[in-house]
Image (tube, rainbow, N blue to C red; front, top):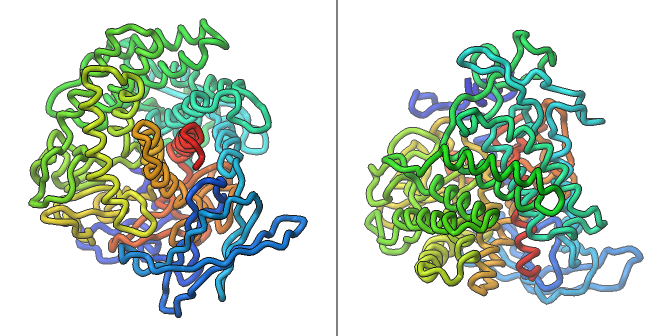
Length: 608
């Protein structure tokens, strides 16, 4: 039983209609689109003084206002206002819009924008407009701790985790974090928490928290999660996929247990040991080893040795299933092992992995078009619609470019890390040229197709499911959101956008291109309110927050929801009906992890 079926059986969401089964009705959330109000799309957090500041106004049949006014609403009130023009945005996807540019406003304060018939939420202009939010998502991890009582959140839980599915033997895998609005502990999902914490520690160090909490808070939280990750390493050195499956064998694991080992409600270890999980795990252990070296050298060494053992057991991934996502993670894993050990062999291995990753890049135009190239494909090649990964079935049927619910920018992320780590490597110029093509001939053009400048979910060959795919050129199409009629597992793409922001922030620094940083901010601003619903997707920040699907513990400050998804017409949808929909409203670890990584990277690269 998958998540969709579990929730449907519990009466929490309608079953998703399947076009393949000839069912014509769609669940109510798929019929939702952006309503008549608000028409203002604006980041709720605000802006740093030097950042580019944009107001987007949707035109919905009314007379277009010629200007907008910004007023200081700080207390005590200050007599300040600024009136600026609204200009028609170039015609793009999602309809007609006006744009207001108030980048010139650098004066610190709290403001509100006024139109003749509408006003914005309050927002700040201040140096720490984004940085001040970081403690909230960090606290979200603490609230999601499993295997211990979290006061005011939940009692001690899952002390009986878990048993092997092959022989029923109990193994102690207590601890870790619940991965979403449920209580499962998938490895690939919850390791995203660790990556967020480790990038935050790496990028901002002791000063990550403006009140001076220091690194100890981050390291303590990382140690808690990593206790579980270390327990998940089998005797062969490889790592299991998570702790989820119920005793009934339906592999959901969305249940509290009686905390008694050996009873019927014990959960099961996911027995699969996928290559992606191994690569994620090695990358994280090497990062943890570096972060803990000064604070606890013996623990750092333990994590490093565990990571090395897994890397050696995994060997060199190869074969017909080779794909850009897994190669990118192995590139990152070997790079982090080099950083942790300073052994040249790991640097050489990272460069070799990168060479294989580059060999997959679509450097030629595919799909009978001459406008887009430089992307990574879903399979071994993007040269034809029947390429591996581009066939029927799965949540991304017919996909041309690499797509992932959370880590969609990981191939570019891996290349940017190599460029930063080895600027004088013999292949460095080749890496830079590959990334210039990726950015200038894939990312920037696709982001430019809407006024919001968000990165679509990816490219497709034609229309592989019975829904709308936006024509690009030739055989290539694209969707901003996941196909809703593929397998029912569609969701909002908050982490997808944040992963692109993270990569673009790195590119802005490496290539000295501030426009990449502006584009990174556009991805983050969509998540925090500059979207067609004017909704902030983080609990505890901004306004017009949808209610989260978190039916075990309720709202968690700092949690980020799956967010805006798309219907069959690829138009934005977001459920405001009490949060009873996982597709758009459920919390998920990768959203929170990538938020920390992206904001800390943007802070490191300059706040403008």
